[in-house]
Amino acid sequence: AALFGFVGAAGAVALALLQPPVQCYFEENPDGSTDRIKRWATRSWAIPAGQAPRFHLKAVNPMLEKHLARWSKGMSPAEEGSALSVLVPLCGKTFDMPFLCENGYGVVGVEGVPRAIMEFRAEHRMRVKGFKSRDILSPGEKGSWEKGVSFGPSDQFAGSRFGQVFKKGEQGIGYYRDKPAVWSGKVNAGKKSLPLHVIEGDMFDVTPQMISAATFVKDGRFDLAFDRGSLVAIPPESREQYVSTLSQLIRPGGRILLVALDYDQEKVPYNSKRNAPPPFSVTGEHVRALFPAGSWCVEVLEDHVE
Image (cartoon, rainbow, N blue to C red; front, side, top):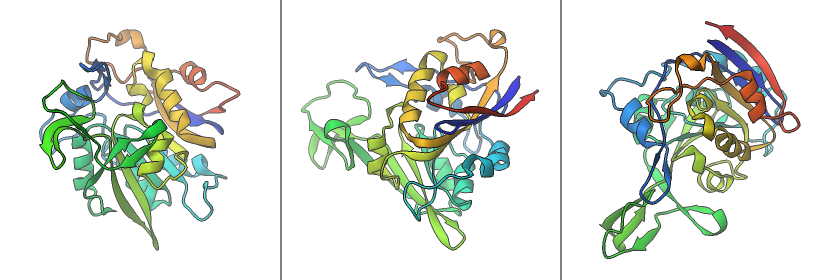
């Protein structure tokens, strides 16, 4: 297996860290939507309390520590006087988020598995303050989002609806919006506190409008993104959609620090009906195809063989 690192200007930095296989694949919901969360929740996170999935690092990612200064060198925040903003897709309960805040960055993570967020809150309660409850996000007009629970009246259950629950609530019987949601906290960084927010939802559904409505990043686009295990978790046929989603969330001139894993995929053949891989093999050629020259500048930071 090879470990890679890539850096880019309109574009991307990528570093790779070898991780053991985890279990994840997508399913279709009865309403035709795609459930990218269920298998993570029922397989990777179906473990006894007190244990962590095999992909979870119980420390700050060493590649992040090593290349943090270079990753953000010369960058200026979108708003003068504010901190650089960092997006962490598929964040789990990573130590990287409070670490980034303590080093002067504002952070937004995206995680679809509720247990991961609950454990993050418990394990980092001394570092992340105010991270106590979530605000439901409901869709508005023309792709907009707002905090609050939307409601659709219905006298009887008419089938599952993704992101909604059927119940009798304050507004009567019907469908209440339950996801996505946002958790908001702060981390002490010397003489000031920096925001740490986590979107509870599917990364593929996140838009600049959602980020703007839910977090401190009011223009909906980030200065930086740290992908330390997301791209390798995405099946090959979904990579372009993932990169398209990620690209919309990065402002022009922004950078991505990407952790990728290159190995002989034939030894762990991909079959959508199997539980593993991920992690999928992502080569340097794959990265350059996904982040093409002209739109992105890709630089290899490290290349390890294990």
